[in-house]
Image (cartoon, rainbow, N blue to C red; front, side, top):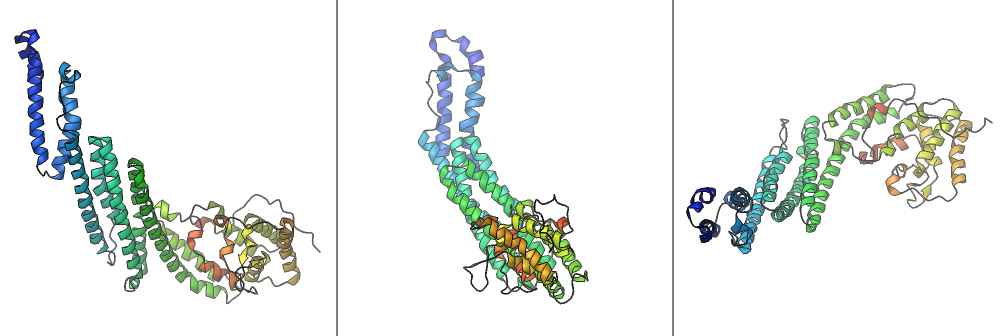
Length: 439
């Protein structure tokens, strides 16, 4: 058309409008050819190419380069009618829905076949899923914004279905008694590989929901729910395996004067350290089981109470502990579950663990908790998302086995990212609490 305009048109009389005749003929021939192509059952890739050429290439690289007066005057109609375009887009969405669902199921089945293998192989499930869906979600917006939104909604629906199936298969995997006969390192590696699928697939679901229409929200929520259940299950499996390793150390810890013998405690610290290294292969999101950074100081607080020797120092530490974690007061009595237990019960259990049997010293320390209770009056319990000790049942009456065994039953998901470096004592700013005078 540029050649026609520059070389042929000058040979005709100016008033004849020769260029418009050529242009309408060229445009009409293209429209006829495209219409015939659209009526055929084109493969998905050809349909993408046709729509992209119609919407982007022809206006930009043909009509846009010759600055056509006839186009500006509206003399040219569309190459394809709006109805034909809509039909082609509908066919694209329908084909993508069917093809991606089948492909996702095939990818999941192929990956699942290797979950029980003894050989530790790097998993690519999340990467395969993202690449499969992003191939379509990146093509569609290049055709039109509307098709991009429809394709994002379609792929998000397929992703939600895939993740629900993924969740069910992960549950079956962990329920399989034969799988639990795998070597512990292999079982842990496989569990970590499964939970590591979560962050990239969650990010993909969030991106698709942002691009898609408002009605994409239920599919996003379904995707998040399935991933949350997989994460919680894998966390529980890993925690159970950890507690199985710790249990012998806890039993030994309670059968001897453990403060004078570091063997049991060293075994606990060594087990936790080894597990921390193994779990570090998890991606950041599942590795940090919680955002509750306010719990980071629990271990140092408890360590101080257990290791300090003089009564005034223990009083200070107990005051800081019950001030920072007021739900100690609201722990449930294991006999009367609806009745709050005074915070003295938790403190008494700590004193039992450290072997403090002196009645006078115990009374001095427990008086700190009692005075705080009296000073706070009828304060309400802390919000559920700010509770820790209320999840630990206190034996009635308290005895030395109570707190460590209860801690062993507490889900690790309540703790923030394990900071194993905090196991040794850490200095903290001085507490505003002043110890009671010695009697």
